[in-house]
Each structure stands twice: as C-alpha cells, then as structure tokens.
Image (cartoon, rainbow, N blue to C red; front, side, top):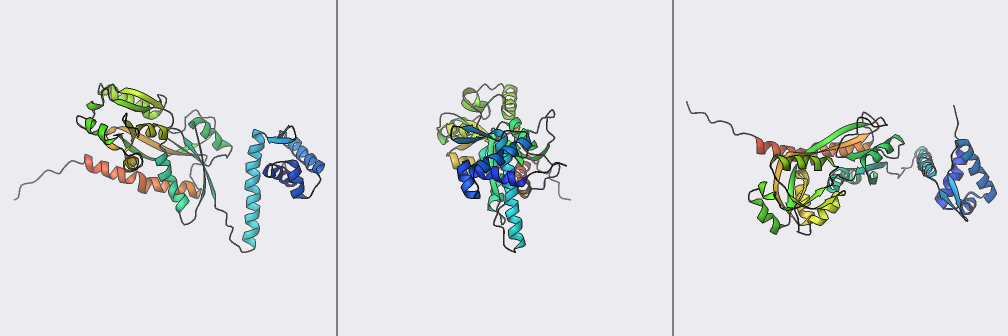
Amino acid sequence: MEWLNYHHLLYFWTVVREGSISKAAVHLRLAQPTVSAQVRQFEHALGETLLERRGRQVAVTEVGRLVYRYADEIFGLGRELQETLKGRPTGRAPRLRVGVANAVPKLIVYRLLRPAIEGETPIHVMCHEGQPEVLVAQLATHTLDVVISDMPAPANANVKVFSHLLGESDTSFFATPELARRLKRGFPQSLHQAPMLLPMPATELRRTLDQWFQSLRILPAIVGEFEDSALLKAFGESGRAVFPAPSAIAPEVCRHYGVTVVGETPAVRERYYAISAERRVTHPGVVALSATARVDLFAAHHAASARRTQRPRARTKAS
C-alpha cells in the first residue's frame, strides 16, 4: 500500500493557501529552500507537477488544484476531529458541491437547494454551471457531489454514475401582460408566427417543443435562442417575445420577470434528474433536495395537473 506523506501535503497546501513559497515559509517557520525542496519531493512521489514557476510567482496546475481540494478536506476533517474530541462544536457546515446543467432553470435549482441552505443544519452549497457531460465527468474525481440536469446521464458515459428522477413538469408559455392578452385567445394556435425565445436546438426541451410545434403545424417566429435559461427569461422580460418555462415554477416566473401565463400544455414535459456517483444517495444535501422535489416543488404541480385532467363522475339517478 502506498502511503501519502502528509507533511509534504501540508507544505504544498500552505503554499497554495498563502499564495507563495515565501509566505508559506513564514507561516510554517521554515526556510524557503526547505519548503521548495519538500514540495518538489511531494511532486516526485505523486509523479505530477503541482506548481509551475512564473517569474517570482508560482501558479497551481490543474492537477495541483485537484490535490489542493483534497488537502483542504483532509485538514478540515483533522481540525474537526480535534474539536470534536475536545467536546467543542465543529462550526463547520458540510459542503455540497453541485453541478448545474446550463439548460436547467435557475428558479428550479434555487427551489431545490433552498432547504439545504436554510435548514436546521445549514449546508455550505457550492454551485458550478456547465455542460452536462463535463459536469458528470467531474463526479468521478469527486469534484462534484451531484449534478442537476434536464436529462439522465448518457448510457455510454465513461464514468459509473446513477440518475435519480427528481420530478417532471408541464410547460407554460409566458409573455408580458400586453403581449399575453393578444396570445391567450386561440392558444396554442395563436403561437403561430408569434415572436418567440427558445432554448438551443441541442437541448431536450427544444427537441420536444419542436415536435409539438410540428404536430400542431405551428411555426413560431424565433427571435432568439439561448443556452442559459436565465438569460432567455431576462430577454422575455423585455416584452418583445413569448418564452417557455416549467409550469411548476409559473408563480415564481411571473413574479420575478413581471410576465403572465399565455397558456400551458401537458404535451411538453420537462424532467429533472439528480446524477450521482452512488446508487443510493447519502449526502444530507442531496437527500434534502430530493425530498424537496418529491414533497414540494413537483408534488403540488402534479396534484394540480391531476385535478385538471380528472373526469367528473357520472351522475346516477335517484332510486
């Protein structure tokens, strides 16, 4: 079994945290050549370059940033262990590192993560946004704890991950009150040639929308396509075009962007997933967001949809 030299790890971690070898040497009460030599030995043992010289400064490599994150966790746990043994509260909130796919509405993410931040045991949430395939790959290196996406992990992913369905929602179309008044009558056919903002063609929502438009022979006048859902809604706030968003967050969208609902369709449904490296999620933050999705965010919308589609019972004649 290979053993990690924690003294060398500490020297490297201190250099990165302090920003230079000279400052690290002062903090560690060691000579600069000693700190430099110990870090070089650590790099040699790992077989990786962690720091690069840039003039008088040092820059952290990509591998160095990964090692630093692990070191930060290791020494944080060490401090927590000491404080626990001394009978003192740790004061260190557990971290939840979340990857958010670009296409997922930010109001959905906020609703999912709010209980983790505001709960009785607060969790330190760290959000990273990007392409789903890039974020999923970071689960393998434990850079992220969970990825929130609008699609499950691809079956041909190079990493072993598990997709947990959080919920699904119908789709509503929104516009400023003036534009919405013109489009509500005759919905959804009123969307034909209506100015519209849509997600990029590569997204799951856009593919479903295109199929729905085609089935109804609706050809919207697309004036903008966006990778970022929040930017799409910001343009919709200007009042020049209609835009889609999940019905589950319709009240928040109307309140936040000053728009109103034009119409809703159950034919276009958005699904959201929590993707993790574990089959059964155990991180308290992931458990909290899963519970929020199940009993709050999507549950109320599903109940409302069921009531709308429920057929009235046939009346029976009195005997």
